[in-house]
Length: 346
Ligand SMILES: *Cc1c(COP(=O)(O)O)cnc(C)c1O
Image 1 (tube, rainbow, N blue to C red):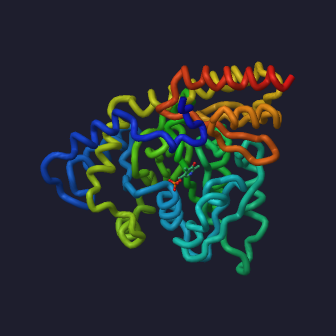
Image 2 (tube, rainbow, N blue to C red):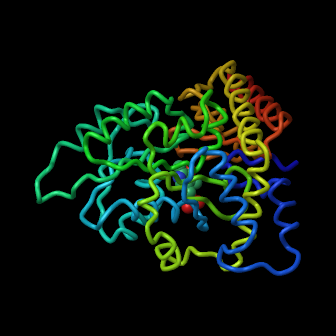
C-alpha cells in the first residue's frame, strides 16, 4: 500500500476545486499576461477577503513572491530583520539578497520560530551608523516554519516596534490560509489592520498548482511592481491558469475550509502521537504541521513501514505536514504504525 506522504504539504497535487476551475478556464481564448477576466475577478476577490483596496500580483512561487516583495521595500543597502529559521534565510538560496542586489538579512532567535518585539528592537537598534546596512524591513512568517502562529496582539506589538524603528512589514504567508483558519480574527485584522504592509499569500501548498500572490496593503510599495515581476521572469503569459486555480481556492470560503481540515488532521495526529511511548511532540500544533521526536527505534520502524516525513537524520526530530489531501484514514494508519513501532521497541 502506498502511504500518504506527510513530508510536505506540496507533495499533494492540485485540489479538486482548483483543478475544476483551471479546466473551466481552458476553453476559448483569453488575453495574456494577466489582462484576462479570471485575473480581474480573483484580484477583486482578494480585495474582498482582505476588506481593503489592495494591489494584487501573481508570481510562480513563494521564493519569488517573498524576494520581489522585499525588493519593493529595500534598496541594496538596506537590511531585513527575520527569524533565523525563516524561509527567507534558510530556503531561498539567497534570492532576497540577489533580487535586492545586496540587502542584508539580519536574523533573530526566538522560541517556536517566532520573533519577539524585544529581539526585533535589539536587531533594529544595534547598529545605526553608515557602515552597516540600514534596517528597513521586518519579515514575519504566518504560520511559522514550526507550525506555530502569531496572535493578532503579537503582530500588533511587533508592528509597533517596526513603526518606531522605521521598518515596513512583510508577511511570508506561504501558509497564511492555515493561520487564518486557526485564528478567531479576520484576514484584515491579522494583516493590514495589525500593520502588515505586504503579504506573500501562498496558494501552492494550500491546494493550487502554481502561483503565489503578492498583496500590497501599502499601495505605494507596489509602484512599478509589474516591471519587477516581468524582469524577474515572473510574469506568466497564460496567467489565466494561475488565477483560475486561485478562483477555485477562493470561491466562498473554500480556502478556509481546506486549511481548517488540514489543521484538524494535524491536531488529531499530534493528539494521537502524544499518547505513544517514545514519541514527543515538540511545538504547539496551531496550523497544519506536527513536529515530533521519535525514539530511534520508532523512527526506523516508521521509515521501514514506508512512511514519508522530513527527518533530521540522527536526531529523530521529524516534521509531518497535513494538506488538503490528508484523510482521517491517513492519520489513523500513521498512528497505528507508530503504536505498533512503540510496542515492538518497548
Ligand atoms: C514553501 C514556503 C515558501 C515558498 O517556497 P517555494 O518553494 O519558493 O514556493 C515560502 N515560505 C515558507 C514559510 C514556505 O514554507
